[in-house]
Length: 503
Image (tube, rainbow, N blue to C red; front, side, top):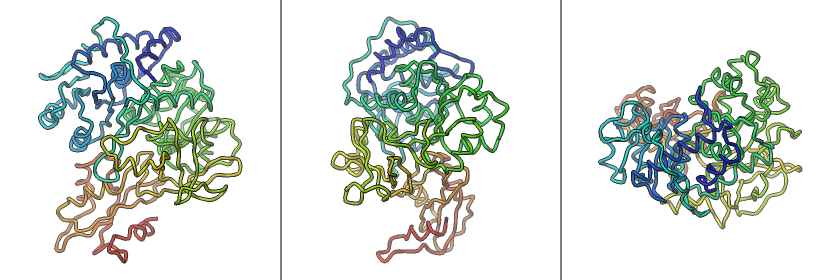
């Protein structure tokens, strides 16, 4: 997908129809094209060229959408970062991505000004907001300064469009390289299964810094579907947005569904335009899926499945499905998906194995990490690490995971990343991180700790230490102290034994 060219074509197709909505601000396709063109000219003026990385550290608002389109129009690589990340986490990502430009808000400009000396790739800091300090450039001035037409930079299908950083299997984050060809999939997937059209409005209620932002922004310009950006999630705000903006399509995660059900004010809002709702990103119980669908007045609340590494959807239910609740749908058209055993052989109906997939929807690889890429992509097949079974009608049901990662409300946290932080605590001798069930978020993080001889600590002290080092969703919610941790015969920590005691 050549995003720059498609955006320009969308003006001829959709003209003055609304493209992006945030709070009371609505931008038409024509205005979107103008603002993005101005920003593209500004980025070129800052020295951005094809293949350069431009990072954003922005909350979910209008400017994250404008930045996305402008960065890709000039052929650069967009690295959107979650504003919940701490400074040390950002530095670790920047040491890999090597961004030449940072787009952020006035709230964070001091952090990036101080970081400039440590990250030599940074040439420019562009600031959203009225307060722009010396050494930074104004996003508003750049956006509002009308410029001559910027010709979209020619890109190849295999060129990298995005670095999407996920928690790594070590403390080092992994940058998923999403190509311009990968970006073609989502608009067509949604159209094939949910029959999307120009009258649809899709609510972006998940972080725009993750895969959800780019895929919805792509869908907007390809299919003419307006994207309403929610911003920080709040169940009442979510319901108000659905009513006010006449939202028709939503995908979100189970913790949000739980919050809506707990608020239990569905009848106070007009949700009649909603026609397609999907729970994704984390395991949803059939009971939750059924209850949410009923409260929203839908025939069915759907489920889907995918990874950032697969652009992202692999499966999706139709809103007209009559399959048993709990399935994640069938493989989408054009995507090879199998359930295999340890040897890579496809398993028959009903047997549990790992989900694997191959095709042009699979990522280019992990940036600067060929070993991690080879671990996940074997003989052309991407191994998801998720275990599932398939029924006689082709529907797939998730049953568990192979990898040691914890799914906190749809955000993947690798246990080794949390353990690495805890291992640096001066009082900790041994630590193992495991998951424990959480009725609201699916899973929560639990740290089992053995202290050094003569040391004392409280669970609050350990949790506060983690909170200083990591984003909040990665921080353990429980700490258990033991004199020592159980070991296997080879001397490794018996994580399985600890996991059993946490269930």
